[in-house]
Image (cartoon, rainbow, N blue to C red; front, side, top):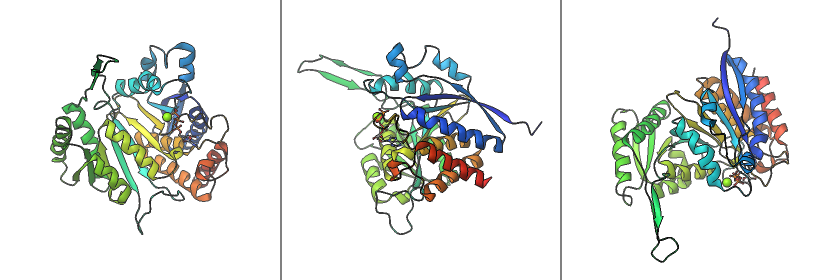
Length: 358
Ligand code: ATP
Ligand code: MG
């Protein structure tokens, strides 16, 4: 019947440290909001983590990707553990998932929520509300290259970037579609004055695709100037598209501009929805505060709202984000935002605002 709920299977990877601490409340909140929008979630838990790695030598089982392939979406808390180098979790879990499922868009909203103190001095009426679209599958993070004459004075290290026409076209198209649905402006990060092969190629392909979007105004910015403009004039941006490395740097800068790392969300999207997408907060496992019940759950909760958007329920995503905003405005905050509430108290406040809105 048209009234029977849509079953959505979500692979849940809580991960390490506060990743696991913020996942529980986020799932509870999704269970509250889902049924209101005809969604019934089935969780598929995976205990893959750096802690698992220290016991087994693997971040995830050999058939991990196959196990995830059956899910509609993936929710990840955070992976990281003292003593386990970052590249282990990156190359043992995150990158294989992003690539296997063609999650070629890393989407990060940079939005100043009410009640968050901005480290920048904004002009009267200026608002920060833009989205960074980071290319997530190719570019500078490649395995092509090597080192020779190791340890000698003649040592050479070479690292190649790999940009493909298909790869740049599809991320440009995603960013242009997004800009069309927003304020019609796209900033493209480049460095074609210094990087003379890949960056002119990036620019050319972005503009070829943009020719099909007469309603979107496209501006190229060299990455150095773009970073400066983020700080000096953040209100001018709507959608920003960037290569893997440039996007990585810009998204951290973006997160720092709008307050705590504890609230920043992200999605690794397969826009065609042929494979699961993966949603994760920007923060890591935060071993310095793990186990104390003070982790800010809002990054994970905002991340859950992005998953609702991607599931084709932007009204549900917006409802959840409103509950996050209401919680911030009401002053219920974890210590990273200057408050004294616990993870559970903040999550409970979000639930209450959701129930009030129902
Ligand atoms: P990892 O190695 O997993 O990346 P990390 O400690 O290097 O962990 P983050 O987890 O991003 O990196 O933490 C950076 C800082 O921000 C830490 O001091 C951490 O306590 C704080 N922090 C991160 N996330 C949160 C959160 N959700 N709530 C409160 N503080 C947070
Ligand atoms: Mg870290």
